[in-house]
Amino acid sequence: MPISVTAHGRVNLIGDHTDYTGGLVLPMLLECRTEIVGERIDEPLWLLRSDAEPEPARIELPAKVPTNDTPHWARYPAGVLAVLAANDIEIAGFRGSVTTTIPIGGGLSSSAALEVAVARVAIGDRAVDPTTLATWCREAEHLASGVPCGIMDQLVIAAGTPGQALLIDCRSLATSPVSLPADVDVEVRFVAPRTLAGSEYADRVADCRAIEQIIGPLRDAEPAAIDGLADERLRRRARHVISENRRVLEFVAAVAADDVETAGRLMTASHESLGADYQTSNPVMDRAVSEMLAEPGVLGARMTGGGFGGCVVALRRRASGKR
Ligand code: GLA
Image (cartoon, rainbow, N blue to C red; front, side, top):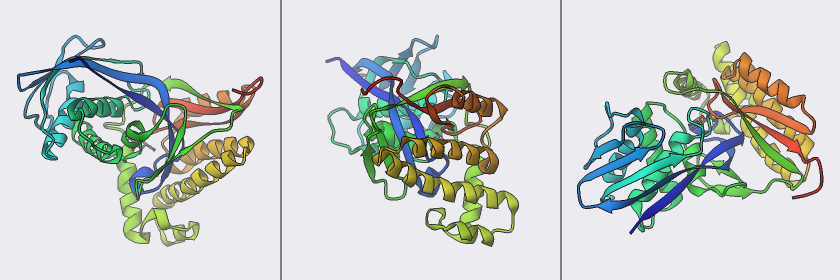
């Protein structure tokens, strides 16, 4: 019986670099997606062919924690299969192909989509809730890329619906859908390729750990808690995370009240905070945001995701009528 699964890319509307301290995020699935099509085989082996790569990924079962698999992207499926097996999911052999319309290295979670798609194939008919699946895929990402990411990407891909934002509480892992007003569009523009592996992403995670050693959980911190930090760099990082968690709530309230101007302003404020305090933007991304802000109907714009490149996202008022 042929098997076919999909997993969509995501954009984050607001709430960046808050997930790994149990904060709030508001991502949304996009139409672009990764698809795996194939069939089970009787050998203890996964063979995945990708249009974009000359070599198929060949993963012998039981899959090991990925080391030097070739091609490089084989680390992701190998990581997922290893984590699932460690959680007592029996993995059958599989042969198939992977195609994607998610730009690779564009900051729209192509790796998380691949992980979720592989997990969906491997899990088959078994009932696994999206939160568990996302937790496993996140662990696979840690193993495969070494990036100590949070849960946002895997969870929205596992639990979200395209076109609808999903508020995620990264501490409780509770999710709730958020509809955007009908008179705005979310626009995503690719600016520059990036990879989080080897970037300063891990340094930011380490900064947050250091902050929490001093002032306790960032999720619970009030702005005044920043006064308890002597180090200027840590003060800035904390100011971003504390203010960003608030902006997510304010954004959700604004869209619920159809106040799209406020929602847009919050997105732009988020970008400024990421640039000035979290220092994950750069001149190229700043310029792309400024250019978008100058366009007609744009209410707010920001870099989205891990930073250091990738895409910008904007909220734009529709020129005419409702959806
Ligand atoms: C990357 C990570 C996510 C999150 C964002 C920043 O996309 O994978 O876990 O930390 O960066 O918000």
